[in-house]
Every structure is written in C-alpha cells, then in structure tokens.
Image 1: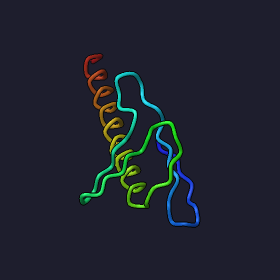
Image 2: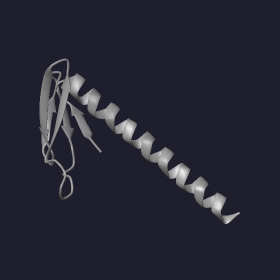
Image 3: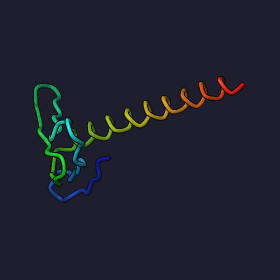
Length: 81
C-alpha cells in the first residue's frame, strides 16, 4: 500500500512497495497524456494528481478483494448447509 508525506512544494511523497517475482519493478501512471514512472521500493515525490490516482487505484483494489473474500465466504457457507 502506498504511504505518503506532504512537503511544502506541493509535491507528495509516495512509496510503492516492491513487488514479487514476475511483477513490474515500476508503476506507470498516465492521465491526459502525461505519464509518470514511479520506481517501486523507493520514496519519490509526485504531483498531487499522481498521488490521488495511486490512492484511488488502491481503494479500488481493496474494494475488489473485500468483495471477493465475501463471495468466497458466502460460497463456503452455502456448501456447509
């Protein structure tokens, strides 16, 4: 999960954890033709819109995983009946 600190210049420090084997070593955020490459495992300062997109993406993943876990629990409860 991304961690942040805000600094006076308006940029936001983010940290994207390193990924496992076979995953990309960097995260690319692109909006309206402007791309930002963020290396994983390093603290970098990015524009606020980049940090916002990172957080939005993380929230979407968290929601997806929560719903998936809920469906698995429901399926398991149905099999036990």
